[in-house]
Amino acid sequence: MAPGLSSRLADTLDALRHPTRRGLFRTLAAVPALFLLYVLILIPFTPSISSIRKASSEQPAQILSADGRKLTEFKQSNRQWVALSGISPHVIDALIATEDHRFYAHFGLDWRRTAAAAINSFRGDRQGGSTLTQQLARNLYPEEIGRAPTLTRKIKEAITALKIEAVHSKDEILETYLNSVPFLYNAYGIEMAARTYFDTSADQLDVLQSATLVGMLKGNSYYNPVLNPERSLQRRNTVLKQMLKRGKLTATQLDSLSKQPLRIDFERQTEPPGPAPHFARQLRKWLIAWADRNDYSIYGDGLVVRTSIDSRLQAAASQAVTRQGNSLQNIANAAWGKRSAWSTDSSLVQTFIRESPEYATAMAKGRTPAQAMQELQADKDFMRALQRQKTRIQIGFLAIDPRNGQVKAWVGSRDFEEEAFDHVQQARRQPGSTFKPFVYGEAYRQGASPNDRLIDQAVEIDVGGGEVWRPADGTPPSGEAMTLSDGLAYSKNTITAQLIQQVGPAKVARLARQMGVRQSKLEAVPSLALGTSPVTLKEMVAAYGTIANGGGYLEPLLVSRIEDRDGRVIEEFSPQEPELALGRDVAYTLLDNLRGVIN
Image (cartoon, rainbow, N blue to C red; front, top):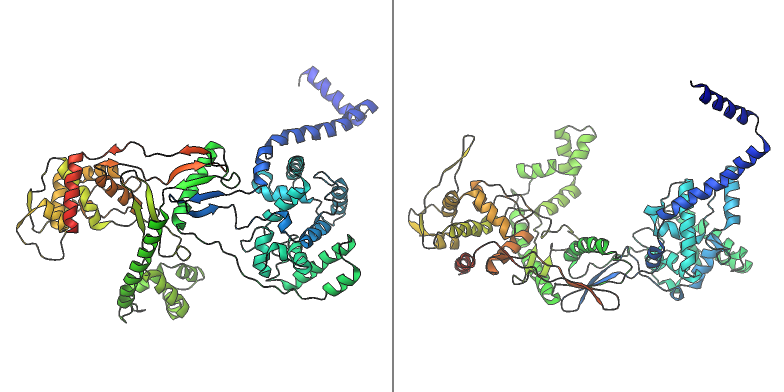
């Protein structure tokens, strides 16, 4: 070690062993200075004032159809915002008496309460010292502040509380708090809590109901009046005692009220799905991304989003899906209702059982495959649910205006509440013969004529690995020459298989992508001609729209414009210039051939 460094180290150790008055004073002065520096460093990592202004006044985006009907609104959670004047005064009395009785005297932090909580926690009796404003800060910004019991979290919470107090009045803070606090069962805010637990509104809550709901704030699950009524009753009575202590009840009232039962009238509150729920779900994803790019909040800025959906066409589409779904389901039920179709001896049914999560659970518990199969086959409820799941017909419906790409109707399943999976955007299915126009379109693009002929004959195509593909139709080949237009009109597999060999599977796949099948992977193999590569309905409708639009592809358009809360247009969304996927002559030739399919 260098002599100078050794000397300085020795001096430092000596100063630590024999501190001077000046050194001790400097050390003590450094502690609050460092703490203050740490607080200043954390300030930029807390919510901004502008963010606090938005979060404290919920104005969800309003989603309108093209003809001005409300489709839905994008709320952050299942709640109905009510003004403070629309909340029972018993709720406010119970809340302040129990959670923060000096609420109107502090500026976000209650130093006396914080100090008392720290002392009691140090003694082993851990207590919370947060004010209502600090609790609101946690509720509004759970990610930015967090809930870990650390000094950093408490400082962030305190800074945010001071910011909230700086920009909002006490009444505004109370209103925001009571509209944002969670009450289990997907109920947020006092209005939804009143409906969920007492089948009433926030302004009609009586003293006992108010005390019960405020009592839940100490621990929603622990004091859940549905599952833990005894604890909830005790906690309610504790709140009543606090109201007596703060002069909001008399001793006589307390004595009478404490003897009353809870009288819960519980019913979960569900949000109505609206006329176009699958469309709304996709739109929410798109709008969140747009809002992030443009510094807007879809929950607090009161945006008005005018979509391309026509509410009349949407209603007609929903009716068509219901009618067709019921008709097809009756056919399926009749087929599966036969004893030989859905039987525990059926190899297909046994495959369904083996693919189920319940089978995997049984195997994880140590059952042999035979035991797991036998147990599940004997479970009538499981077998009934499995049959319904595997035999229920599902439908997707999408309507697009090919002239501008605007989506006019979107139905993702027969019943959104029963089947939220979107069979328009999410489901990938083999399109089958609906893929054939891409094969004929590529042939016409390469110069073929609808009057060109191919022989309707048995086809064998070597696909490698010693395998031979033999596409066939429902009837034996006629052996006669058939025009390409008739091959498409009658959906002949033998003709289409020969045609894709002539034009090339890779070129058919490329054309399909250009026309609109842009997200799904297409295998460039001969069987692609018969639609063996899974695609989405949205891709197929967009691609068929390209044919109707004279060969020009347009990206499906969901929104026409977005306005602010005052009606000023923020952004308009017009169709882009079509991407030429097919020449107009080819597109119209193909369009004429598809008329033959309908005829």
